[in-house]
Amino acid sequence: MKKFLCCSLVALVFMMFSAMAFAAGAPELRGTWGGAVKLITKDGDIRENKAVFVINKQDGTMFSGYKIWFADKNDNAETEPFCGIIDADGTRLYLAEGEDGYLQGEITGKQTMSLYYLESGRKAKAIKYNLERVRFTRGFIEIDKDGNKTIIRSEIVNVYPLNAERIMREADVNKDGKLSKTEWENWKNGK
Image (cartoon, rainbow, N blue to C red):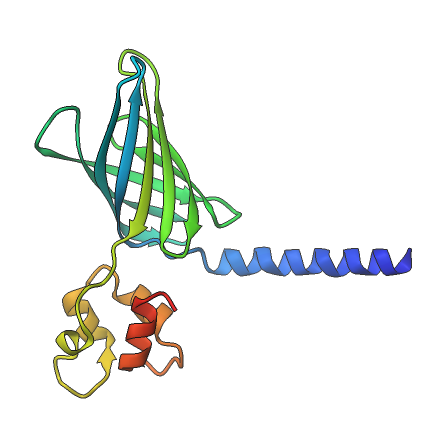
């Protein structure tokens, strides 16, 4: 019995430290997320398309940005602002759109998320977004403008202004303030 209580106490302490660690650093969502959209209307019509969510501001668990998508049988892209929060568990997301509607979702991986939209009434529909963080396609040499075989924050800002802070935080493994080609490639490939 003592062993069980001791193990329970250790588990409780571990969970408390995990919760405090989350409060200190919410998942970084800033950047561009794109992917497939699947929609069903109240009449049973099913449509598939693509959408992009750009998260350009984040303060802890709060974030905002805009989404771009193609509306009902419209060839023109539509843009709508949104704001959202990350739940205390660090994986669930809640968003409010600028015009109407709400989205709920979850972070499904380091570079993926799923969002779900429900709308009732005359234009009732349900939408699922499967999003992946847009990969960084520029090569190391293209970013390394001074040719010194390392990338610093200011060089990244010139190419990826919305993502420079996140890139440095995630890719700079040895925390020396610059990225080697190996650090860049490992980060870019999700290693």
